[in-house]
Image 1 (cartoon, rainbow, N blue to C red):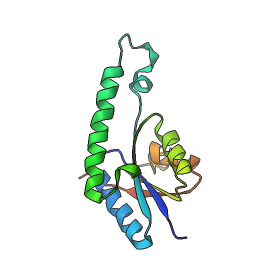
Image 2 (image 1 turned 90 degrees about the vertical axis):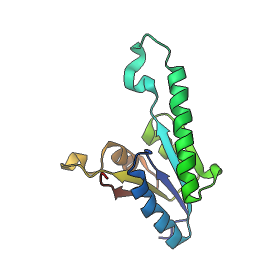
Image 3 (image 1 turned 90 degrees about the horizontal axis):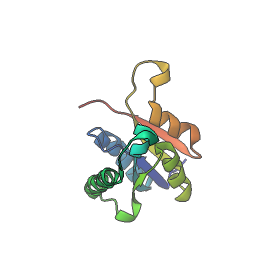
Image 4 (image 1 turned 180 degrees about the horizontal axis):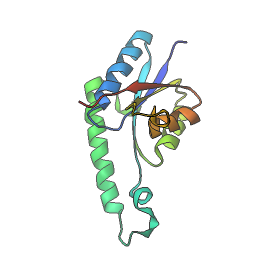
Length: 144
């Protein structure tokens, strides 16, 4: 199968460059278009609705910081702005939504390959795999 549209999901950690190396090589070999996505889980997911303070300012700062980091990361790869997504929501759901919206035929995610069968892919990679309507490539990353 030849891939035409590839979506790389990154968490903007140092390991993201390892995933990018594989994604860029694959896209060059198949002449595919590469897009990037970074999803920010809302603070309300982490803390529930019981937090007695307004988290919107902090959420906006997190979103802005992520956008700046993704823009810088994408610039290093030559990926245009219209192929970059910084979204707030449930990670797997947002990746699936953009993959469907943009007719993506391959999603690339990083996987830490932690010990144990249940942790083989990691929770995010596993969630992306099980709900995807296209192929998913999990790139094993190593802590640097």
